[in-house]
Length: 413
Picture 1 (cartoon, one colour):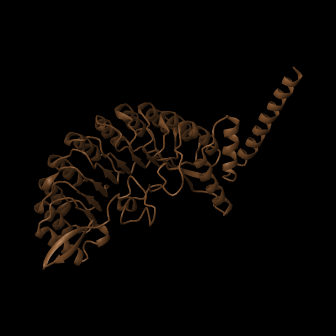
Picture 2 (cartoon, helix red, strand yellow):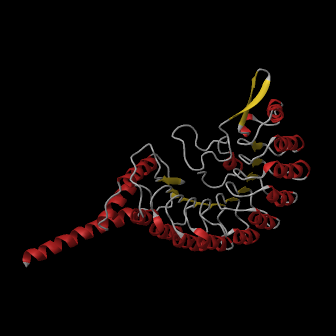
Picture 3 (cartoon, one colour):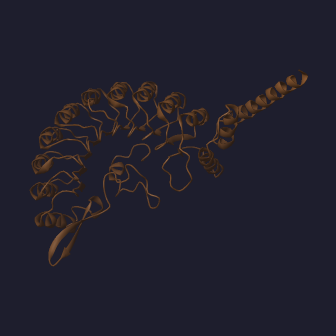
């Protein structure tokens, strides 16, 4: 019995020592020793250490030693191909969030492509409530369901600092989408929201109501929503009253030429929208001509337009090129994936040669073979690195991600 008592006393002392070390390191309020704090907390909670988290925290510790004291983004993306990654779970994020809430120097967390699930969403919501300096949170593709989306949306109703949230690829569905729409009628800080590919097929009407009430959101991504013309109509009706949204992404939907009637009409009076992404819809030449008329005669605010892969033939593409001759503001246009005839190739070649269209501001490049002009694809676009980050070169360059350069909000990707 005495031996048993000694063992219990030893365990008690060990636990007390661990807690003291943890408390001392957390009380500093700086990012110094983040790795040590993480290991201590894992020990206290009897949780297995994730070596990837330890590696990243060590990098942050070294960055702090070199003098960085603010504006640090913790990059724990699960698709990092440069280091060995053990994808982060909800339990891992629980421990990590308890450390991050005490460090105001950490202003961004990039946790894309991990396995947080709804348990991780719970701790992300807690972090939003307790970390007052967080401005950027990337949770794309983390298997977060509607209940997790609801938790994050509710946390953002009270949060006053987050500027940029990516929920891309998390199937929060219509229930979660409605929670986000409700939140955006209350939240006064979020400037950039990405809920693309979240299975929000019936939430457009709620998002439309939100845009009428919200006066801070500048950038909204609604790609892969199954949106049809009536959904775009709801958004356009809201844009008559909205004076802050500058970037609208409705790519990869089911919008046709009829939807362009609504968009062309609102662009006659809306003086705020600067970037519109219509890529991978089906507006065809008739829809392109509706837009061209407005861009040529009325709108003088739109800077960038993407109509990539929209079943547009030469007639519609030439109409868009003609609008650039009278519209001095439209600087970026992306047309690859449509049908190019020789007249189209000549029209865009002339725009580039005359300097009206800069080569970096479009995704086509003219070349000549046997005295005939053709267009080749160039690597430029509004969001070429939307789903991935290159392992070399500049990930956030103004040519490959022009939309983010034209409307800079918080972190880029």
